[in-house]
Image: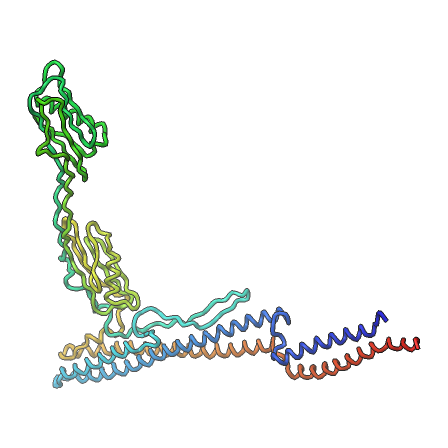
Length: 501
């Protein structure tokens, strides 16, 4: 009654059948034999990593599509420019004859020049122009996973082909900046003018008489002899000596004070920027001590006049700025440089030069706005200003702007130049075509690789629905039989009831 072994075995079997049935039902509903880490941690981890790679390759495919479009625009523009240069060659050939109107031919050449410039400026995709500048462009092409799990990327490098007509060599610093141009020195300042105060001794000098000069609250007292009276000159000399002793002793009340004078005068000079109070007194009505004009202080020092009217020199930057150009500004013998970055214009170059100069030259500062650099000189002598530009790379078609067939010599020279220019544009178009083909090949490989990874992931985690369906039918039958077996096992103890009848 208490232990029914048959029922226990039947129950265990039914539980296992139910677990298997639940697993098969999950496979059928999700389509996966391994849907989480609990099902199979190792295979789930591998499939998850592979899925992350798939996501990465799909992003790379988008990058390659963008790169292919960018290169396609550049290739198409280069091919169009090649055609325009060939048209220009026809005009140049016709200008070799002396019995033609070269001026009208030059008009057609100028129009073709302008059209080439328009195409170069417009040959951009999403803001990236491969026909201007020199810096290479990298396009993300692959995701590489090493055996230790380290991930790295690969790029396809696309070399720009600068087909712009206006290159860096056409940009120059304004002609106002020449070797002889200077920023004139500012107006000179004057020497400092100390404040002074005269103290005069006079009257009838008595014996044992006190003469007192109070400077900044500190008393200096000279007492005449008790036997024979001093004269005014002697009293003044005594006071000068006593004041000098206070100065020598570094009495703070006498900071910046010097003493002088002759005869009966004591002259106080204040070299500080703050006025110093002075008072005088005597113990006798007969002798006198007085300050000039009744003044009660020694005036503060008058500061020197600064160089407040600086000389100035202006440097103007203009023209077409090309990435990689180096702008050099020499101020008083010191070179300051700025290298143009992609997208820089005259304003950015001028700002870079202003920042480079700053206050790095004695008495010279750099200011200005926009494309101007204003050099201000507070010194006492002129400062020479010179400027130069070095182009890191000249434009491949810069010579197009110099073609002039209005003269026989110009037409002859143009015929030689146009061949070089056509070859330059052909090389650019061919380079872009090769790059575009490589991008297309890589993009196709990435798509194939992505499909292969998806197939591999499916083989690892997807369920075999045919097998799962067959197992489902089998387990459902087993479940029914298990229930019947458990029911039979549970009925066996009822046999004991017959013994109690």
